[in-house]
Amino acid sequence: MEDTRIILSGLWVALMLTYLLGDVLRIFAGDFNAGEIDGQEASEWMWLLASIVMLIPIAMVVLSLTVGYPAIRWISIVAAGFLVVFNIAGLPYPSAYDNLLIAVGFVINGVTIWYAWTWV
Image (cartoon, rainbow, N blue to C red):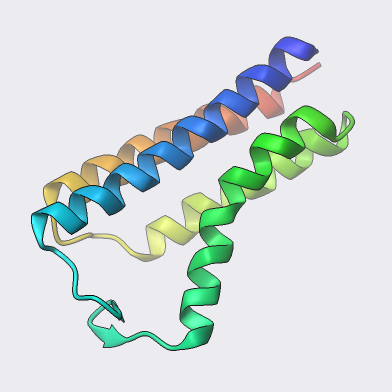
């Protein structure tokens, strides 16, 4: 059981780093406009929503190690499923690297769901 907790926690770290890599590449590639999200000026609530979404993998690292079974099993499945749906809503992304990293994120989320689902 502890192995599964560590694996899930590691998967959440990998997902978070994949998302952050996309953000860093977007900055260096010049594919962003400061203060904008999807080509429109971002409001305070948009930044709040973005921070909440990006906090999900970070919170899941801690929760994977601390929340009891079977609750963490279902929390992991729901969180990973939500992030898949959230990212599907934004497809396709303008750059090939963005689409590649989103696909990697789908794989990581799929593995997360599989580990949580098969956790016995």
